[in-house]
Image: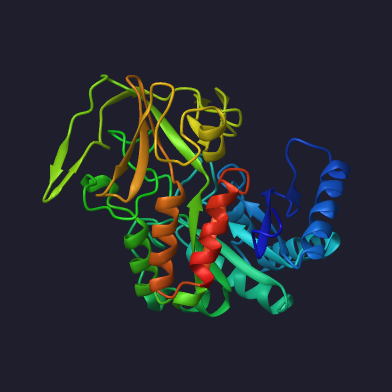
Length: 364
Protein backbone atom coordinates (compact mmCIF):
# COMPACT_ATOMS: atom_id res chain seq x y z
CA UNK A 1 0.00 0.00 0.00
CA UNK A 2 2.78 2.43 0.88
CA UNK A 3 4.06 2.36 -2.70
CA UNK A 4 0.72 3.70 -3.92
CA UNK A 5 0.61 6.93 -1.91
CA UNK A 6 2.84 9.92 -1.13
CA UNK A 7 1.03 10.66 2.11
CA UNK A 8 -1.29 8.65 4.37
CA UNK A 9 -3.51 10.07 7.11
CA UNK A 10 -4.14 8.04 10.29
CA UNK A 11 -7.90 8.54 10.79
CA UNK A 12 -9.11 9.72 13.23
CA UNK A 13 -8.93 11.20 16.68
CA UNK A 14 -11.89 13.13 18.08
CA UNK A 15 -12.28 16.42 19.90
CA UNK A 16 -12.99 16.48 23.64
CA UNK A 17 -14.02 19.20 26.08
CA UNK A 18 -10.68 19.21 27.90
CA UNK A 19 -8.42 19.91 24.87
CA UNK A 20 -7.07 16.36 24.69
CA UNK A 21 -7.71 14.15 21.69
CA UNK A 22 -10.17 11.31 22.01
CA UNK A 23 -9.31 7.78 20.90
CA UNK A 24 -12.36 5.64 20.24
CA UNK A 25 -12.82 1.86 20.14
CA UNK A 26 -9.46 0.95 21.72
CA UNK A 27 -7.17 1.71 24.64
CA UNK A 28 -4.51 4.41 24.47
CA UNK A 29 -1.75 1.79 24.54
CA UNK A 30 -3.33 -0.14 21.66
CA UNK A 31 -3.74 3.08 19.69
CA UNK A 32 -0.14 4.01 20.44
CA UNK A 33 1.16 0.68 19.13
CA UNK A 34 -0.85 1.05 15.93
CA UNK A 35 0.27 4.65 15.47
CA UNK A 36 3.94 3.79 16.03
CA UNK A 37 3.78 0.95 13.52
CA UNK A 38 1.93 3.17 11.03
CA UNK A 39 4.52 5.95 11.27
CA UNK A 40 7.41 3.49 10.97
CA UNK A 41 5.96 1.84 7.87
CA UNK A 42 5.30 5.20 6.23
CA UNK A 43 8.78 6.53 6.86
CA UNK A 44 10.38 3.31 5.62
CA UNK A 45 8.75 4.00 2.25
CA UNK A 46 9.28 7.79 2.27
CA UNK A 47 5.55 8.38 2.74
CA UNK A 48 4.51 11.34 4.89
CA UNK A 49 2.57 10.12 7.96
CA UNK A 50 -0.17 12.45 9.22
CA UNK A 51 -3.05 12.08 11.61
CA UNK A 52 -6.55 13.49 11.51
CA UNK A 53 -8.67 15.10 14.20
CA UNK A 54 -12.42 15.38 13.80
CA UNK A 55 -14.53 13.63 11.21
CA UNK A 56 -18.29 13.22 11.21
CA UNK A 57 -18.46 11.85 14.75
CA UNK A 58 -15.40 13.63 16.14
CA UNK A 59 -16.14 17.33 15.49
CA UNK A 60 -18.42 17.88 18.49
CA UNK A 61 -16.22 20.32 20.40
CA UNK A 62 -14.24 22.11 17.68
CA UNK A 63 -16.28 25.29 18.08
CA UNK A 64 -15.63 25.70 21.80
CA UNK A 65 -11.98 24.65 21.46
CA UNK A 66 -11.39 27.46 18.96
CA UNK A 67 -13.67 30.07 20.54
CA UNK A 68 -11.07 32.12 22.46
CA UNK A 69 -7.38 32.93 22.14
CA UNK A 70 -6.67 30.96 25.31
CA UNK A 71 -8.56 27.93 24.03
CA UNK A 72 -6.89 28.07 20.63
CA UNK A 73 -3.45 28.10 22.22
CA UNK A 74 -4.28 25.13 24.44
CA UNK A 75 -5.80 23.14 21.59
CA UNK A 76 -2.96 23.95 19.19
CA UNK A 77 -0.42 22.83 21.79
CA UNK A 78 -2.37 19.62 22.35
CA UNK A 79 -2.61 18.68 18.67
CA UNK A 80 1.06 19.46 18.01
CA UNK A 81 2.37 17.57 21.05
CA UNK A 82 0.22 14.60 20.02
CA UNK A 83 1.77 14.65 16.54
CA UNK A 84 5.30 14.85 17.89
CA UNK A 85 4.68 12.11 20.47
CA UNK A 86 4.03 9.54 17.74
CA UNK A 87 6.21 10.98 14.99
CA UNK A 88 3.48 12.30 12.68
CA UNK A 89 4.66 14.95 10.23
CA UNK A 90 1.42 16.86 9.90
CA UNK A 91 -2.15 17.33 11.12
CA UNK A 92 -5.35 17.09 9.14
CA UNK A 93 -8.23 19.07 10.67
CA UNK A 94 -11.48 17.40 9.65
CA UNK A 95 -13.95 19.91 11.18
CA UNK A 96 -17.44 19.02 9.91
CA UNK A 97 -18.60 21.82 9.79
CA UNK A 98 -17.60 25.31 11.01
CA UNK A 99 -20.71 27.45 11.73
CA UNK A 100 -23.00 24.74 10.30
CA UNK A 101 -24.42 21.75 12.16
CA UNK A 102 -23.07 18.40 11.07
CA UNK A 103 -23.69 15.40 13.32
CA UNK A 104 -26.64 17.07 15.04
CA UNK A 105 -25.25 17.93 18.48
CA UNK A 106 -21.97 19.67 17.66
CA UNK A 107 -21.17 22.94 19.38
CA UNK A 108 -21.39 25.64 16.70
CA UNK A 109 -21.04 29.42 16.52
CA UNK A 110 -21.48 32.06 13.83
CA UNK A 111 -17.82 32.92 14.51
CA UNK A 112 -16.50 29.43 13.74
CA UNK A 113 -14.95 30.21 10.35
CA UNK A 114 -13.03 33.18 11.74
CA UNK A 115 -11.94 31.20 14.79
CA UNK A 116 -10.89 28.24 12.67
CA UNK A 117 -8.58 30.47 10.66
CA UNK A 118 -7.06 31.86 13.86
CA UNK A 119 -6.57 28.30 15.15
CA UNK A 120 -4.82 27.32 11.94
CA UNK A 121 -2.59 30.38 12.17
CA UNK A 122 -1.60 29.42 15.71
CA UNK A 123 -0.83 25.83 14.73
CA UNK A 124 1.28 26.95 11.78
CA UNK A 125 3.20 29.50 13.83
CA UNK A 126 3.96 26.96 16.55
CA UNK A 127 4.87 24.17 14.13
CA UNK A 128 5.90 25.67 10.77
CA UNK A 129 7.61 22.49 9.60
CA UNK A 130 4.49 20.39 10.13
CA UNK A 131 2.02 20.05 7.29
CA UNK A 132 -1.40 21.58 7.93
CA UNK A 133 -4.34 20.28 5.93
CA UNK A 134 -8.08 20.68 6.27
CA UNK A 135 -11.09 18.80 4.92
CA UNK A 136 -13.89 20.87 3.41
CA UNK A 137 -17.37 20.38 2.02
CA UNK A 138 -17.81 20.42 -1.78
CA UNK A 139 -20.27 23.31 -1.34
CA UNK A 140 -17.51 25.74 -0.43
CA UNK A 141 -16.93 27.56 2.85
CA UNK A 142 -20.15 29.11 4.13
CA UNK A 143 -21.37 31.13 7.10
CA UNK A 144 -24.03 30.16 9.63
CA UNK A 145 -26.76 31.32 7.21
CA UNK A 146 -25.31 28.97 4.57
CA UNK A 147 -24.17 31.89 2.45
CA UNK A 148 -21.04 31.37 0.38
CA UNK A 149 -18.16 33.42 1.79
CA UNK A 150 -16.04 35.79 -0.27
CA UNK A 151 -12.30 35.41 -0.75
CA UNK A 152 -11.79 38.47 1.47
CA UNK A 153 -13.34 36.49 4.35
CA UNK A 154 -10.85 33.66 3.92
CA UNK A 155 -7.54 35.44 3.38
CA UNK A 156 -5.92 34.03 6.51
CA UNK A 157 -6.94 30.46 5.74
CA UNK A 158 -5.54 30.73 2.23
CA UNK A 159 -2.27 32.00 3.70
CA UNK A 160 -1.67 29.30 6.31
CA UNK A 161 -3.26 26.06 5.04
CA UNK A 162 -0.89 23.83 3.08
CA UNK A 163 -3.64 21.67 1.63
CA UNK A 164 -7.40 21.90 1.48
CA UNK A 165 -9.03 18.56 0.71
CA UNK A 166 -12.31 18.88 -1.17
CA UNK A 167 -14.65 16.11 -0.01
CA UNK A 168 -16.57 15.90 -3.28
CA UNK A 169 -18.67 12.91 -2.28
CA UNK A 170 -21.80 12.05 -0.26
CA UNK A 171 -23.82 14.29 -2.59
CA UNK A 172 -26.73 11.86 -2.83
CA UNK A 173 -27.43 9.57 0.10
CA UNK A 174 -30.00 8.59 2.70
CA UNK A 175 -31.40 12.12 3.04
CA UNK A 176 -31.82 12.76 -0.69
CA UNK A 177 -35.27 12.80 -2.29
CA UNK A 178 -34.15 10.29 -4.92
CA UNK A 179 -31.19 8.09 -5.64
CA UNK A 180 -28.36 9.77 -7.52
CA UNK A 181 -24.60 9.97 -8.02
CA UNK A 182 -22.81 10.01 -4.68
CA UNK A 183 -19.73 11.73 -6.13
CA UNK A 184 -20.56 13.25 -9.54
CA UNK A 185 -18.10 15.02 -11.79
CA UNK A 186 -20.93 17.15 -13.17
CA UNK A 187 -24.22 18.26 -11.64
CA UNK A 188 -25.92 19.08 -14.94
CA UNK A 189 -28.68 16.48 -14.42
CA UNK A 190 -29.08 16.88 -10.66
CA UNK A 191 -32.11 18.39 -8.96
CA UNK A 192 -31.84 21.92 -7.58
CA UNK A 193 -31.08 20.73 -4.03
CA UNK A 194 -28.07 18.68 -5.14
CA UNK A 195 -26.27 20.95 -7.59
CA UNK A 196 -22.90 19.86 -6.19
CA UNK A 197 -20.11 18.13 -8.09
CA UNK A 198 -16.36 17.95 -8.65
CA UNK A 199 -16.60 20.73 -11.23
CA UNK A 200 -18.72 22.95 -8.96
CA UNK A 201 -16.52 22.35 -5.91
CA UNK A 202 -13.24 23.20 -7.60
CA UNK A 203 -14.77 26.34 -9.11
CA UNK A 204 -16.05 27.63 -5.78
CA UNK A 205 -12.75 27.12 -3.91
CA UNK A 206 -10.76 28.84 -6.63
CA UNK A 207 -13.24 31.71 -6.45
CA UNK A 208 -12.81 31.81 -2.67
CA UNK A 209 -9.13 32.63 -3.08
CA UNK A 210 -7.30 29.33 -2.79
CA UNK A 211 -4.47 28.55 -5.18
CA UNK A 212 -4.99 25.49 -7.38
CA UNK A 213 -1.92 23.80 -5.93
CA UNK A 214 -3.39 24.15 -2.41
CA UNK A 215 -6.40 22.06 -3.38
CA UNK A 216 -6.70 18.29 -3.57
CA UNK A 217 -9.71 16.31 -4.73
CA UNK A 218 -11.00 13.50 -2.52
CA UNK A 219 -12.24 10.44 -4.40
CA UNK A 220 -14.34 7.96 -2.41
CA UNK A 221 -13.24 4.35 -2.21
CA UNK A 222 -16.77 3.36 -1.24
CA UNK A 223 -20.20 3.17 -2.81
CA UNK A 224 -23.64 4.08 -1.45
CA UNK A 225 -26.76 1.97 -1.91
CA UNK A 226 -30.54 2.36 -1.87
CA UNK A 227 -33.51 0.00 -1.96
CA UNK A 228 -35.40 0.84 -5.14
CA UNK A 229 -39.13 1.52 -5.06
CA UNK A 230 -39.68 -0.39 -8.31
CA UNK A 231 -37.65 -2.82 -10.45
CA UNK A 232 -37.79 -0.80 -13.67
CA UNK A 233 -35.55 2.26 -13.98
CA UNK A 234 -37.33 5.43 -15.09
CA UNK A 235 -35.37 7.66 -17.50
CA UNK A 236 -34.81 11.36 -16.87
CA UNK A 237 -34.04 13.57 -19.86
CA UNK A 238 -32.01 16.75 -19.42
CA UNK A 239 -31.04 18.44 -22.66
CA UNK A 240 -29.17 15.90 -24.75
CA UNK A 241 -28.69 13.54 -21.81
CA UNK A 242 -30.82 10.60 -20.77
CA UNK A 243 -29.99 9.35 -17.29
CA UNK A 244 -31.32 6.50 -15.17
CA UNK A 245 -29.55 7.57 -11.97
CA UNK A 246 -32.47 9.38 -10.33
CA UNK A 247 -34.99 6.88 -8.97
CA UNK A 248 -37.47 6.71 -6.12
CA UNK A 249 -36.34 4.57 -3.20
CA UNK A 250 -37.85 3.14 -0.04
CA UNK A 251 -34.86 2.92 2.26
CA UNK A 252 -31.20 2.09 2.79
CA UNK A 253 -30.24 -1.61 2.71
CA UNK A 254 -27.33 -3.24 4.55
CA UNK A 255 -24.02 -2.72 2.82
CA UNK A 256 -20.78 -4.65 3.00
CA UNK A 257 -18.64 -5.92 5.85
CA UNK A 258 -17.57 -2.44 6.94
CA UNK A 259 -21.01 -0.81 6.76
CA UNK A 260 -22.43 1.14 9.69
CA UNK A 261 -24.92 -1.01 11.57
CA UNK A 262 -28.18 0.31 13.05
CA UNK A 263 -27.73 1.80 16.49
CA UNK A 264 -27.55 5.13 18.27
CA UNK A 265 -25.18 7.94 17.26
CA UNK A 266 -23.20 10.24 19.55
CA UNK A 267 -26.21 12.55 19.81
CA UNK A 268 -28.47 9.74 21.03
CA UNK A 269 -30.36 9.56 17.73
CA UNK A 270 -31.30 6.20 16.26
CA UNK A 271 -29.48 5.33 13.05
CA UNK A 272 -30.06 2.72 10.36
CA UNK A 273 -27.81 0.89 7.96
CA UNK A 274 -25.30 3.04 6.10
CA UNK A 275 -25.66 1.13 2.84
CA UNK A 276 -21.89 1.44 2.31
CA UNK A 277 -19.86 -0.87 0.10
CA UNK A 278 -16.11 -0.70 -0.39
CA UNK A 279 -15.38 -0.71 -4.11
CA UNK A 280 -13.10 -3.71 -3.52
CA UNK A 281 -16.06 -5.56 -2.00
CA UNK A 282 -18.19 -5.04 -5.10
CA UNK A 283 -15.63 -7.07 -7.05
CA UNK A 284 -14.73 -9.54 -4.30
CA UNK A 285 -18.38 -10.33 -3.55
CA UNK A 286 -19.16 -10.84 -7.23
CA UNK A 287 -21.43 -7.87 -7.96
CA UNK A 288 -18.97 -6.25 -10.39
CA UNK A 289 -16.71 -8.06 -12.87
CA UNK A 290 -12.95 -7.85 -12.38
CA UNK A 291 -12.59 -5.74 -15.52
CA UNK A 292 -15.27 -3.42 -14.02
CA UNK A 293 -17.31 -3.51 -17.23
CA UNK A 294 -20.22 -5.70 -16.20
CA UNK A 295 -22.56 -6.19 -13.28
CA UNK A 296 -23.06 -9.71 -11.91
CA UNK A 297 -25.41 -11.62 -9.57
CA UNK A 298 -28.46 -9.83 -10.94
CA UNK A 299 -26.82 -6.40 -11.22
CA UNK A 300 -26.34 -4.39 -14.40
CA UNK A 301 -23.56 -1.82 -14.65
CA UNK A 302 -24.44 1.60 -16.04
CA UNK A 303 -22.05 4.43 -16.83
CA UNK A 304 -23.90 7.71 -16.49
CA UNK A 305 -22.56 10.19 -19.02
CA UNK A 306 -24.45 13.05 -17.42
CA UNK A 307 -22.78 12.81 -13.99
CA UNK A 308 -19.63 10.95 -15.02
CA UNK A 309 -20.15 8.27 -12.36
CA UNK A 310 -21.19 4.61 -12.78
CA UNK A 311 -23.77 2.68 -10.81
CA UNK A 312 -24.98 -0.88 -10.37
CA UNK A 313 -28.68 -1.68 -10.39
CA UNK A 314 -30.69 -4.84 -9.78
CA UNK A 315 -34.45 -5.22 -9.45
CA UNK A 316 -34.20 -4.11 -5.83
CA UNK A 317 -30.97 -2.17 -5.26
CA UNK A 318 -28.88 0.65 -6.69
CA UNK A 319 -25.21 1.21 -5.76
CA UNK A 320 -23.41 4.43 -6.70
CA UNK A 321 -19.61 4.17 -6.74
CA UNK A 322 -16.40 5.23 -8.48
CA UNK A 323 -14.45 2.78 -10.65
CA UNK A 324 -11.20 3.17 -12.55
CA UNK A 325 -12.91 4.89 -15.48
CA UNK A 326 -14.61 7.59 -13.39
CA UNK A 327 -11.56 7.97 -11.15
CA UNK A 328 -9.34 8.67 -14.15
CA UNK A 329 -11.85 11.23 -15.42
CA UNK A 330 -11.68 13.00 -12.06
CA UNK A 331 -7.88 12.86 -11.93
CA UNK A 332 -7.58 14.29 -15.43
CA UNK A 333 -10.02 17.08 -14.58
CA UNK A 334 -8.17 17.92 -11.36
CA UNK A 335 -4.88 17.94 -13.28
CA UNK A 336 -6.33 20.24 -15.95
CA UNK A 337 -7.24 22.71 -13.21
CA UNK A 338 -3.73 22.60 -11.72
CA UNK A 339 -4.72 20.97 -8.43
CA UNK A 340 -2.05 19.72 -6.07
CA UNK A 341 -3.23 16.13 -6.16
CA UNK A 342 -6.00 13.66 -5.37
CA UNK A 343 -6.87 11.86 -2.16
CA UNK A 344 -8.60 8.50 -1.71
CA UNK A 345 -10.95 8.04 1.24
CA UNK A 346 -9.99 5.69 2.48
CA UNK A 347 -7.17 3.31 1.60
CA UNK A 348 -9.35 0.26 2.35
CA UNK A 349 -11.81 0.97 -0.43
CA UNK A 350 -10.30 1.52 -3.88
CA UNK A 351 -8.73 -1.27 -5.89
CA UNK A 352 -4.94 -1.11 -6.25
CA UNK A 353 -5.29 -1.00 -10.03
CA UNK A 354 -7.39 2.15 -9.70
CA UNK A 355 -4.87 3.92 -7.47
CA UNK A 356 -2.00 2.93 -9.75
CA UNK A 357 -3.87 4.23 -12.79
CA UNK A 358 -4.60 7.47 -10.95
CA UNK A 359 -0.91 7.94 -10.07
CA UNK A 360 0.12 7.34 -13.65
CA UNK A 361 -2.45 9.81 -14.98
CA UNK A 362 -1.49 12.43 -12.41
CA UNK A 363 2.28 12.30 -12.84
CA UNK A 364 2.66 11.49 -16.55
